[in-house]
Length: 231
Image (tube, rainbow, N blue to C red; front, top):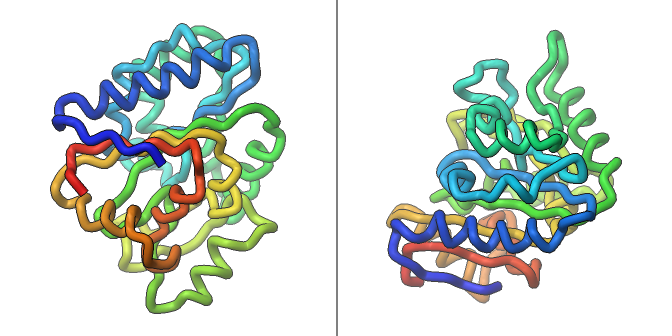
């Protein structure tokens, strides 16, 4: 993992530059870009949408099961100028907004089906929560067996589950660890003092995925971290 420690006001632009380089390398090829929500959306202000066209597909890394446009991750992504410009250039997207009467499990299957149809390079912008979660995968140090069954089942790339009191948005539709291992390039964005303990867990030689799901990115040789924290 390459680590970039920068002043806070330079992290988003630097992360975007890394993504822009990856997107430019895919010109003429099919590729999938999955965006994290939350603070990672700041990166999108600096993405060169000229790299996006009919050969590209855009989606979210995980989803909140809600029709509320202020909660649903794709709905938040759709509001960005990046998304609007990319679609105007002919880019495709994976729809993860719940349809009428669609259950969380049905949405998870539809999301997974869309991912399995894809065969090109996968590039992701990645966030890390203060609790060391990543994508929609929350830590379950108190129940590693549940964590393993829910998030590390090789048969599932997407799963619907109830995060209970671990997150304000309880019902999640998240990509799983087996899918995250298929991502070719991960650009990780984590700023703020509240992220430092999670970053320490990410970079520690000791720890488990059930304790700190963000440790999955240690397995990706092409992962690159952009942070304002000195670890």
